[in-house]
Image 1 (cartoon, rainbow, N blue to C red):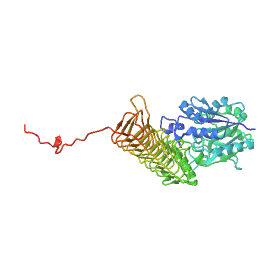
Image 2: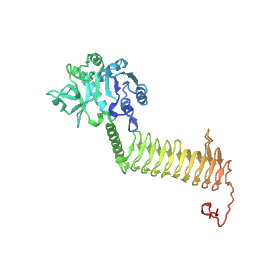
Image 3: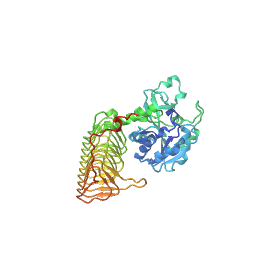
Image 4: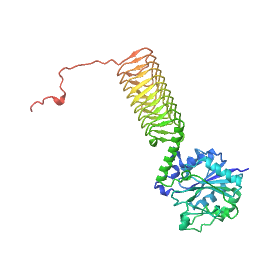
Length: 462
């Protein structure tokens, strides 16, 4: 019975990112790089995880624990190489662990399937050490996998230690290993820092293992184990993650009019028949229903869009619901907590905040509707505002079914307008309005014929 624990190396200073922010905290597909690695371990149900941290350790562990709440963090202090990191982590491993997965924290495209294959092979072989390799288009900077005449692994040579002949080898070490726990406990103290960098290299364990038994490997695509060390690496990882997601959705019947311009987070779901136009950003746990259409330049975060709904161009929706057949936009803003009912319309430059619109409501032009509930088939005229804030507290407005609100009206909360009531144009509603009533603020109109504006009047001589 093999029981796996894991050690994730996450202590680097990210100097090549040229940023004060750790590379592990940058997002790929809406998830921090280190969070994506933690999620792979979670999906494989690896029973215990130890993350070796140092630089921005609190922020890194916060990102980890959003995926693995029980993960342990071990502070490496001043990092002295991958071997030193594992040495720091070993005491934190549970005693029941028979095997240990060791991997870097900066491989956001790693697939759980590949790691599972490695773990299964390692267990079947009864190996002391196993690892993933890849064929590099440009191997510079990677440890080279050196093999004997029979194709068996001899050792891994770090870039800084390579001869010119060894540097020409394109098979490289991914930095992802599985070790027999009991052997790892014995072998790590044998590592020496007698190299050009003065560090303890985990790769030296492979040479120690080869002296005892065959070291098996699995080769995976380079993109899957690429590390994010620079801003260019990060951009490439984002592009590859997006392309994979778009390809999967297309296979399920989703139409992308400009697939290369779309931003897609990992937790987004899109049903077949939906159309996603160019430059759209779908973030968080957004869900798009069947045959819905999201217009160009729209940004949706944690949004739910129903079947056959239409989101017109350049609309922003945050943590809100747009139900079946509704239409929102263009240039609308749905702030968190809004709910647009079936076949309702929210149009140009309309902002909602904690607004619930029942089926068939229309608010087509230039309005702010905050902290409001609107009954079905009501019509909200252009320039309507719910005055929900007194400078300290928020208040609610309730409109019944089939209410007509004339243009340029203000509803001063808390206030209720009954079913079928009519709010005249330019009215300020200060008190509750009964069902079926008309509410107006009477105004008189004065006309002065022949009036000349002051700037056009002839000046009197001085």
